Image (cartoon, rainbow, N blue to C red; front, top):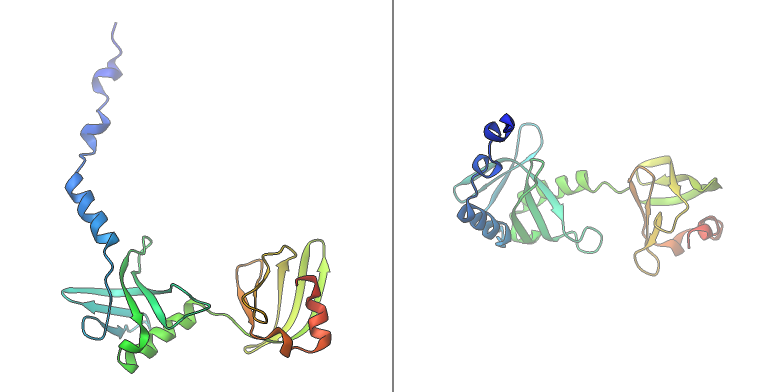
Length: 193
């Protein structure tokens, strides 16, 4: 006796028709590098404060701004992506200076929102307890408290004097010049360096 499910179960290949040409075209579009300049792209601010883009025949009601080199070169190679969950790249701004000043400011505003990183100006205290460091610091946005793990990834040296501090929630803080801190403050950071 034959199993009835065998006759009624649809073949998976019949359900999903494979379109090799469409896949090839999509792959080519993804791999194509498109540079956005003042000549082929126009950015505008939406009513909600987001960034919109018109390039060629396409209009995007909202786009995302991503830095390729956020710590070392925030004014060049800026990726503009669709605002949905796939965040497909629309194009790349090679140099921010290639855009009109007003559009540069709109993009810088979006960068500041996405890459919010307070600068630590004074380290009031750092306590080490049970594998965590509890920070009390003054930043350019005021006094704050945050917690980091004691692992080597919590405080990273970006160069001889610049430090990047990442707390347990993924928030980042910058110490632009370790040597401008007082001797007492530097001593508190000996745990990390």
